[in-house]
Each structure stands twice: as structure tokens, then as C-alpha cells.
Amino acid sequence: MKEHAHGIRLAAMVLCVAIACAGGIYCGSKVEVLEYAECIGPANAAKIPSAANTQWTAFERGTESRLAILLTEPDSAWLALAHGLRSMGIPFTVTRDWQRALRHRCVLVYPMITGRLLDAEALKELAVFAREKGTLIGVGVLGGGLNELFGFKEAIESNKRFMVKFNTFDAPEEESVPVGSKANSVGTYGYSEPSAERLADFPDGTAALLSRKFPGGRAYAVGVDLGGLMGVGFNSRAEDFPGKLRNKYQPVIDVWLKWLKSVYRSSEPGRVLVGTVPDGRAVPIMITHDVDYEKSIPNSIEYAKAEAEAGIKATYFVQPKYIRDHNDVAYFGKEAVEAVKKLNEMGMEIASHSISHSKQFAQFPLGSGSENYPDYRPFVRNQYETDGGTLFGELRVSKFLLECLCTSPPVISFRPGELRKPDALAQALVASGYRYCSVSTANHSLTHLPFRINRDRASLIETDMYEFPVTIEDEELPEMDKRFDEANDVTGKIARNGGICVVLIHPNVLDHKLRFMKRFIDAWKGKAWFGTMKDYGSWWAARDRVEIDTKRTGGALSVELDVPVAMTDLTIIVPPGSRFAAAQPAAITVKQEGEKLVLRGQIEGRISLSLAGVAE
Ligand SMILES: [Zn+2]
Image 1: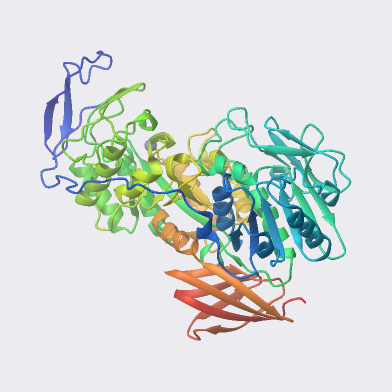
Image 2: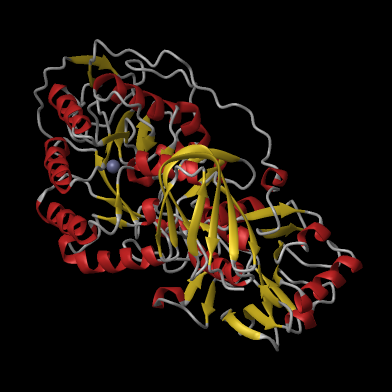
């Protein structure tokens, strides 16, 4: 590590611990800290409010055009399932009333069908429904005498099935997908001696997904606890899942959501979904940079110039490093501050990458919520030890300093150093004033879709935080520009499933990484939506609250949208062959490209659309 020469004054602080003298930089128990005279704070204190468990009744809404989840056991992973359906844009309601559920044409029973959870009349009517009226999806069909309806002999429970093999798939990566691991098992039921069509199998020869068609309806038996699987992914607990790889297309949750989407769409003509990409584009691409090294500061300007030249905006996760430690010098001096100000002026998003960038971040205590600059002084001794770090300190002080020194728009996106994930991160982020995070990789999240995250990386309480997982990163070998074709291919496959592509490039070097970035932007320019995490995040958060109900009369479809948070360029997916006819309010501009209907400009509130030409 080299000596630094910043305009910002270096203060000396005595660190009251015995430090093993390894690198020689902070020997003599002195720590160097940069002083920003004009920035003392934040003055306010952060506090995590108490919160009750999220209730399923919060998702009970809308008309019978939606998928109905018949919740047979509230003590289950239904919230993750609800978040997954929202991410995929499938309109749904949740009910515990089977009679109400059976008024819908597409019903998903979760988490189990058993004689213990449903009475004899309900079970009988479910069977009548599947045979004569609609589409019945049973997750965990354990009993209740419906084995013959779904077409198997026995449901064999196991938490040791780790893979599912689909018998039809769109991409090779969608054939065999993980469903659990030793440390994070997901409940499965393998259906033995199936007489129904096998859509997917477990390695032990039992069926994982069965389909049976009747003259008036359809029955599907699902052998995977879909909410349980989604919970493992959305809580980023899939680290030991088989087959997880960086820089690859690895849909797990997405394969199931895509299947649910197709079942819902084919359950009746006239189904409408919420799109995942603004303006009907192919895929959202977010170029992001982690600025966590002295040399990355000047290099960032070169990346931003290339981005500005290409007409796109990127997100810079900046570590405002004011303490010299094992990781690096205290590089966030005057020149760095000026450089980050320049990035902001160029239209780039300035986001936080923590203060200490500690490998122990996930073990940091929550802290008091009153941590501030200059009192907050985490110290990374080596890769195994960090003194004085707190979760609130990392979140609050980095946001405050970046806002005070460099950027007028508030800092609302966060990415931790090395993607470390403390359990309390979601609630601490919300309490500290953040809205979006990129904490995980797509393969650890088991999805290429964004998703809403819960408190404590657990299943009970949702927060207002959204996660945008990383797919393409720069640290794997070979060097980035040699992986261009692969990255292109991965992005194309993500696009087919409505996922997002977050690219992470550390600006520590220019050459092969910058070459890759320019080429990648060129390849997707005009097709993809490019923007910052903040821009896509605000679009996604508004889109996540959009409600859709439809009513079909012959070949005409009326679509009622509720858009509670103002947004732009909402995309909805309409039935194949249908044509946009009219909108109310009439001032709304609508663009149709095949099945994509884009409501252009700013929209808010209740909107009615009429479509013609829907299949009958
Ligand atoms: Zn980093």
C-alpha cells in the first residue's frame, strides 16, 4: 500500500487495542482517519420499528380473473410464493375459503391437500372443479382421497431430493434444476406409479410434477413446496445448492414461475400479466460498479465517459473510505470526492458500498442507530478481524458522507462488500433510508428476477426493500472480454424469461473490463432498457403494486388497472392475437408490439383498457 497525498487533513487517532504488526502501516497502534470538517452526522437516529407478521389477508383482493391461492395452512411459506408471483407479474388473490377459491377458473392449493386441512365436501368439490370446470394445481397432494384424480398411487415425503428434471424445457439450463440441499432442504413429495402425464421427475424415479386433462378441466400435482423453494432463494440461503455458478443462466425459481405463468395463461382466454421490463424492452440491464480501491476512483471517470458516450446511466457503489486499514489507504480524500461529484454531474447514480468493506460485515452487530461521522471508526485489522463495525454504522455513515460530500440526490441503493449478508440487513436498510439493494447473486437467489425481501432473511415479515441480484461479474476467469459471447447468451436467455441483468464491473482496471462493457452495451443498445438501480428500482417498486383484473365478453376484454404509485412506461402482457382498442383516461398513450402493451408516459390511479380479438 502506498502513501497518499490528499488535500483533506489526516488526523491521528489512537486505537486502544494491541495490533499484530504485519504490514507495518498501523504499527504503533495509530490509525489514520480523514477529516471532513463540513460533514458531521447524520444527526437523526435510526430505529427499526417493531412489526407484526405479514398477514395473508393483505393479498386477498381482486376479481375472479386472477389465480386463486387456496391457503390450507397459514403456517407455511405462502409469503415467498406471493412474492414470486408478484415478481413474475401473475395476478393472484389469497383466500382460505375453498368456495370462494372455486369461483376462479385457476386455483392453486398451497401448501398441502390433505383430509386434515380440507373437509370432505371441499375435497369433493375440488375434484368436481378439476374434472368439469377449471384448472386445479395441487401443491403437496398428500391425501384426501384425491390421488386417483391427480393420477398417482402414493405421495412419498422426503427432504433429501435435491434436483428436479423437467421433461420439456426451453433451454438446456431449464432441464435439471436444484430443489434443495442438505443444509437448506425444501419439502418434497414424490408421486409414485403415476398414471398422469409426467412433466418432471425426481432422481429417485418418483414424479415431481403431474398433469391430467379432463373434458372440462385439468389437474396438476406439484411435488415441490414452491413457497419453501422461493423462500430459500429470496432469503439468499441457497449457498450450498448444487450447481450454482456465477456468470451463468441458472433459473430455478424462474422455471416454476414460468410454468405457473403458462398454466395461468392457458386456463382461460383473456389472461393479462404485469410485464417486468419498462417500455416493452427485451431486458433491463443495469451496469453497476463497485468503487472500493484507490485506483478505482480515477478509472471510474473513464467508465462513466464510455457510458455517457453510449447514452446510458450506470450505478456507482462507492466506499467512502476515510480510515486507513488492512484493506487500503484512506483514499476518499479531496480528489476522490471531486471525482465522485463528477460522476454525479454526469448523471450516474451514486450508491453506497459501506464504510469498512469488511469480510465480517455479516457478523457485525446491529449497532445503536446513532452512529455518525466522525465518531464511527470501524477498523479492519486483517481478513479475519474487524473492530468497531456495526450494521447501522456501515449503512448510515456511508449514505450520509456521500450525500454530504458528493451528491445532491439521496443515496438509496446499497451493495455490501463481497456481497456479505447480515440477517438484519433488510430492516436496517429501510431504517437507514435505503430503498434498493444488490446484495446477492442470481444463482444464490435462485432467480434472475428482482424480488421483495423480508426481515431477518426469514419468511414472516415483508419489508419495503427490493433486491436486484447480480448475474454478470468481472472476477471470474477468463477475463471479461473473452467471456463476451457467453454473457450475451446468458442475457438473451434471461430476456426470454422476463428477468433482469445486473452487471458488476470493478473499475480497478480499464482494458479488458472496459472493452467488454463497451461491446456489451453496443450489443444490447436499442433492444434492452439501460439505467441505474435507482431508476429501475423506482419503476419496479411501483410496478410491484400494480393490480390487474379483467373481464372477457366474447372476443372483447376489459382490463382494469390500479396503479397506486405514479410510474412511467408500464408494460402489460396481453393475450396472443388481441388488439388494443381504447383507454380511459383517453389521454394515455398506448403502444402495442405483439403481446406487449406499453402505457407510455406518466400514469397513476385507475385505468381501463379495452382489447378486441381475444380468442373465445
Ligand atoms: Zn467491493
